[in-house]
Every structure is written in structure tokens, then in C-alpha cells.
Length: 109
Image 1 (cartoon, rainbow, N blue to C red):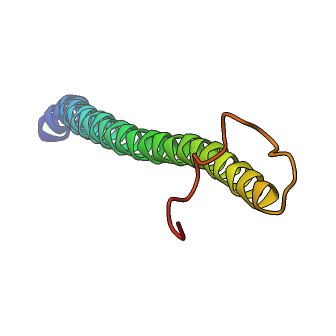
Image 2 (cartoon, rainbow, N blue to C red; image 1 turned 180 degrees about the vertical axis):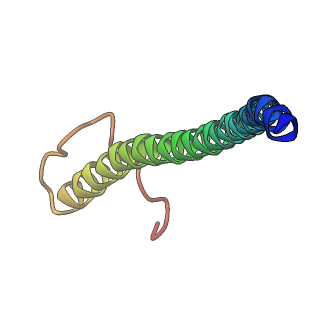
């Protein structure tokens, strides 16, 4: 029976070696998973930063368009007032606003 006794002594050592190997493999897997998570989150941050910049650019364009339309609206309102003033003057009425008279359209004269 010395052979069985020697085998019994080696079993705990083999089990311990197997457990150590499995532990190392699990640590490798967790490290690989950690690196994958870090990489995915970095990619997600880059994507979100690009989206943020794209949306902010669109918002700036929209703001410029609003300001431009507001300014054009002011200009067109001045032009309409001027046109009304000219037509009012043509009909023998007092113009709506002296400074705006003639500032509108130059066509038709």
C-alpha cells in the first residue's frame, strides 16, 4: 500500500496546482474583460463627444438662421413700411415715416 499512500499525497498537490492554474486563467479572463470594458467606454465617449459636437454645430446653425431671419424680418418690415409710406404719399396722404420713405424698393421709378 505504499503506492496508494504516495498517490494520496500527490492528489492534494495536483489539486492545488490545478486550482492555481484555474485561478490564473480566471485572472487573465477578468483582465481581458477589464481591458474590453475600458476600450468600449473610451469608444463610447469618443462617439458621444462627436455627437455632442455635431449637435452643437447644428444648434449654432439654427441660432444663426434665427438671427438672420430676425434681421431679415426687421429689414423686410422696414421695406414694407417704406413701401406703404411711398404708396401713401402717392395717394396724397402723409407718409408713415419720413426717414423710411424711399428706403425700400428702387424698382418702378
